[in-house]
Length: 124
Image 1 (tube, rainbow, N blue to C red):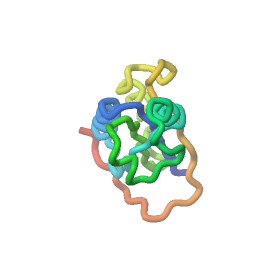
Image 2 (image 1 turned 45 degrees about the vertical axis):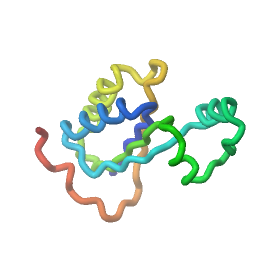
Image 3 (image 1 turned 90 degrees about the horizontal axis):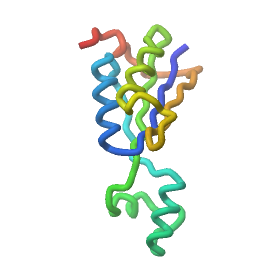
Image 4 (image 1 turned 45 degrees about the horizontal axis):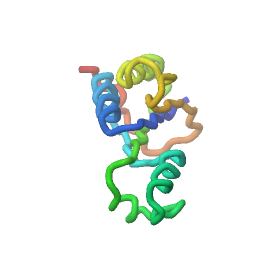
């Protein structure tokens, strides 16, 4: 069964490190989303009273760079998932349990359409 690997990363620098590690491990077809957590949004709101609780996308894009990145990829069950998790942990500094390291989770994908065999490419 395919799996979706999702990493929520607290900074652009860590995101770039993880993306480089994933690419070196043979992962392609990654989707990258700019995101912000509720805790950070509340911190920003406490600093400024003109940020709404649920800001519009346009408003978020006009703000300074405070956002984390959420990256995800769907890999086939033949892909070395444990190896991907190891290189991801290494890229964020060795441990997702450390403060400000982010979050990683894997979930099974019961149905997927359009998944191409990009995971069969040789690792660099």
